[in-house]
Image (cartoon, rainbow, N blue to C red; front, side, top):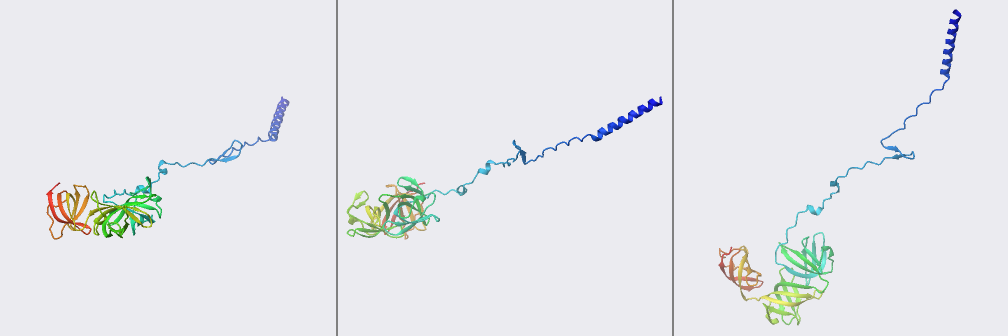
Length: 317
């Protein structure tokens, strides 16, 4: 019995020893592989190479593409004043695109500076053009008006053919056999000289009159052609008024300036406007005002009509 117990105990010790040796000699298990590093900026490509992620695109709002036109920030220009226009022909001597001014060598002599702005219409022949199409040395035809104390170009026409012009003013020098006439135009700062030839027509009203009818001091309207080099030849001279002659006007008063004694009448005969100066020695009628219908008997003196008598026919509106 004792022998059997010893044998069982010995077998138990040998089994424990064998188990301990097996545990000591077994190799350790291989370490688990580390997980691949990750990043917010890179990602593994299909070939195993590291490639950068595309950069983030900023949001673009529709307002970012809106660009303001500087011209739209400027106030609108007022309309061109409704003033009596004078046609001037000449050659472009200088263009000042900074001050918006063109200097013209006027047909007949002298120079004139004319202002322009975006309201000025420019024509090249019969086509619309712009100020950029003007060049020094070109012959132009300007429809001018007085805007305050400045001469403004309402329209500019560039003429490739023979230039033509019109002028109105008082004759300062004239001889029927001299072949030349000198005119003082209200727009031109210097006298305008126009040559005459056998083709020049003289009119008084609708009638053709002899050349000798024209006198120095007469108020005339002239249509002329320019031959270049400052030589202008009159095609037609209309005598509007002769010095010392009495003229009667009937129509509606459109303007009154008692300070200067100026009265402007729209004639009921030809629908033209006439400037008439009151006699400073006669007090004006208290009922003289714009809208009144009047009849005025005048004398033409120098360059103006001077009222001898003024009759108010009706008060008007």
